[in-house]
Length: 497
Image (cartoon, rainbow, N blue to C red; front, top):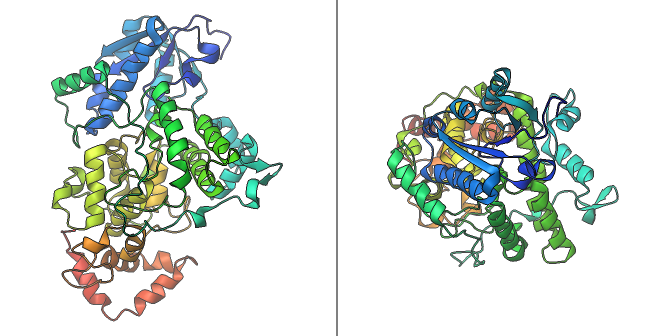
């Protein structure tokens, strides 16, 4: 904070900066400005439930902060700042576009100063020091340094249990002869008058949205976030690790925490979630593999994606190393799950339609895998994930989609493409048993679009895959397929999935 910043300068909170880490502590005495900008709601074709969550979070923050807060409803953010009439402090926003806007407002005198963001564990400055002159990035290196830096699951300088990573123990297939994991349900907040008014206002606005309306499933206040965290730690964390990568048709939440929304709204601090999980391990309430897997998602992967978003810069989404240019089909963009035959794909698209949420394996190994095989344009796909998911804020998706899911950065982030045939989905889900497609078949009317699509993908990208020592073997395997030409002809014109 500069010396020019007055001690009574108000604090402007973006809609993903709504927790006490932002407005508490040294800023607890400041007035707070909150803004609902209609133009931002209309800017993209967002999921209806996402808009509900953001507006509910803003209005609940206004209610919780009481006389400290002023909530302005205007067409644009600029109009709100001009109407407010006083220069404001703001923390670093969470997107390149918002950062550019904030600096423009600072030049106009509407923003007094820009502070480092407090809603992540590691500062952007510290990450820049860590990144140095690296040309390639490995999450495991970053994750281990995070554990050391924040002294999480550590015994001196060594990891508790003498292992950094328990990923191999967190890949169990779903239990057979069960429709669900049978766990207590995740925390679900009770809607109140604020939510009712948000729903009425969204109906009145008549915005062009995707998905369906539905009950609010995710925490949007610090109090709700703490309840959601406590319920996860007590009832769901012990089983989280084993089935972290599994999919069950009748159990959309599985053992996942559902904390991505409160984390990304800023109402839950990542170190609070990490500490709660670590304490559960020390109390022997949850096994180390489950606790480590959960901590890796937050202190490792989530922080890693945040920092690489800034490190790679705004041009990153233009990467298209695999030359993927196919447009997203209408059934995908309109979330028309009923027109999809493949059980895994139908269930994943249906989950986005009904809740604006899937867990990470459905995102990566069903939706992302399908898009990778079919060559959908990476920047269009990034936009779709960011607007259709309730936790898909601008910083979240570029590295997850362009780097991890679509390998469009040419291997800068991931060492190989995450493509697989139907065998993986058959192993890790209960979808294939009743599906019209056979995961073992690549040719014919009942050929699995993932199995056939996999070989189509390998053929299309054989030069790249042949140069990668992790994927050389699949090219050799493809060359031994006697029906390859027929499979390629079949997949070239496939429109139905």
